[in-house]
Image (cartoon, one colour):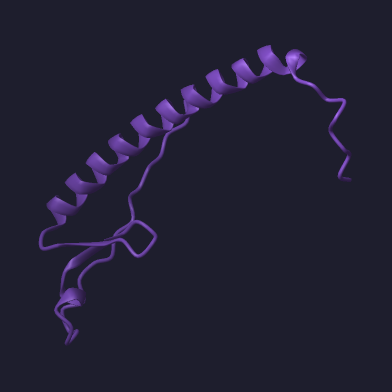
Length: 87
């Protein structure tokens, strides 16, 4: 079974002059950066995020398979005579 596994995070840079660089950071994309003060909080966040993403993945996959099944069932009823070939 497919699953999503996030396990990367940035460790703090103790010598940085920036406060945010002195914290643990998790980047999820689309400019979503999460900051944590302790490593166990980062790992807990990643575990909860993985669980949520995997649940969402399975729900979306089920919806996709049901939609494809419905499309195939009504495909014969659709009118293809008026369609123009755009190749």
